[in-house]
Image 1 (cartoon, helix red, strand yellow):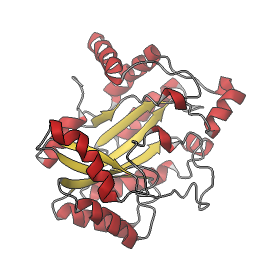
Image 2 (cartoon, helix red, strand yellow):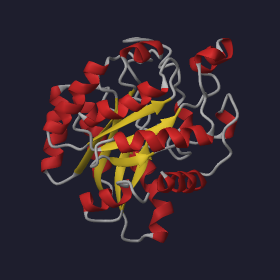
Image 3 (tube, helix red, strand yellow):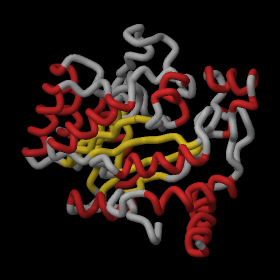
Image 4 (spheres, helix red, strand yellow):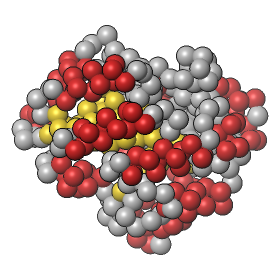
Length: 296
């Protein structure tokens, strides 16, 4: 986007090539699902909302990556790729198993690195040391932490299972290892006022964050949060398009100038939404946001 630090050009500068992430489902679970921290997961969570059709753990990692490359290969023959370990908690396994999966991905032609999505309470020192060694071998390594909120009361309410202090610790340790840190947050979680959301930008800007993914709260069918909404709708404020754009117009200027914006909105499939969506394509939303930012 104009007037913002965009992810695509930053990724090109990082790898030296036009580069695309390809999602991988490596069959991981989550400590919030396997009984370690809980069995129901976070109250908003449904991984169907972001898994491409080819991402099935029954397929090998190599097969998923090869299928994912097919779409981009014809249009961009010189494209390079990052294996994006996306579904659930992709550092939640013994180190030997993680090394085997990561190395399989890196052995696929055209794969120049890894993007690893995980929780801030699932980055042990030994794993971070291994990721640092991959970085030093010349691979592009990015770790993305789902922190969702900086407020402990919210994290407890959505059954996240970690604290903001743990998020800060993981972000700082990862950045100190020389690895770019991405974070995910959700704007509009229950109990958070507009001023709390704006203050979140200030708090995040004090941390060594490289990239940021933001999206508005969406209620997904079959989640505990959707049930909570229908039981107590007064606890929630679901943004209209214009409200969310105005929030971003105030939120973005409060971020540190060098933070790379990867995502500002999410549009889950209509079939999965528990409440009506906006009915906008992402590019339509982006155009409206750009116009609002220019006016502001």
